[in-house]
Image (cartoon, rainbow, N blue to C red):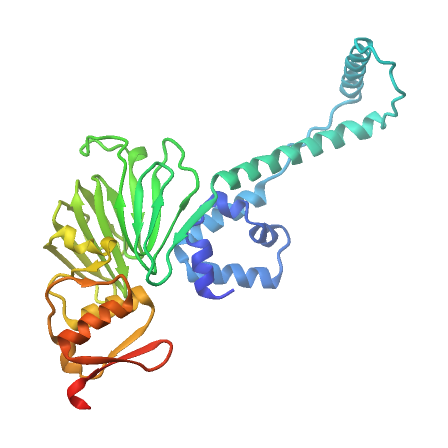
Length: 358
């Protein structure tokens, strides 16, 4: 399994998920060099899961049945009690009793106890696994999708984006969503008093670089190219950064916070939230965007590489909305403004060539 696949599969696992993972159980109960190498690679790839993995491993290692060896007198008394119960049951049945072949009582009782224990444990883990089932909603390039979360909160998922969350959110537990890409969240509040939010009333959105604690209503999150941007439309949210160095930020409506992971750079400014989330209406309205900003946005949302033949044009700013209902529409507007022509070099590459250079 590749590192990317490992990260996707196990990064959101909790201890209970590892406990019910068949391959994890094989590693614990039937260790081999292959199993050991795989799980060491998992720990190396996502070191933040090391504690959960170790706790789950120790838990499985220490699972055992409580062994009680009854005395002969206890076995005989229990056996007679069960025989009496069977006899009473048969006497109350109108039908003629059929001949019953019993196993030796000394074999039957311990075996039944072990089987019952296995059935109960199996049922527990099955229910636990089903209850904690991870849901995923994603969009293709050029697609926008609406998602309803378990609590009724709504998510507008932009193109080339993905969210994961638990199928069931238990009462008294955090509501958590993991985001890759861009989404607009409209969160239902359990407690209307944002100054008195209890731990179990929180709504958390996790990205690669930060965690958003929702204390308000509507906000947009964009996580692309080593950068996470958050714009608050209404209410109040708190940002907590994964690097452990930057202080938490309480955002108010109209603010934008931009964090660049690669440069470890944090910028806070004001903006027009309705412009920032105009993508849900298939419009692109960025804050004083350069041509290069627009081309990068189109690349992320439509999955094509776009090359500007004249590098000087990349630094020009473009005002006004650009329709992004399709890549062709957006490029047509840009090519008209910049006096360029659009040349499809191959299935994945587009070149914008100056008309004057012809």
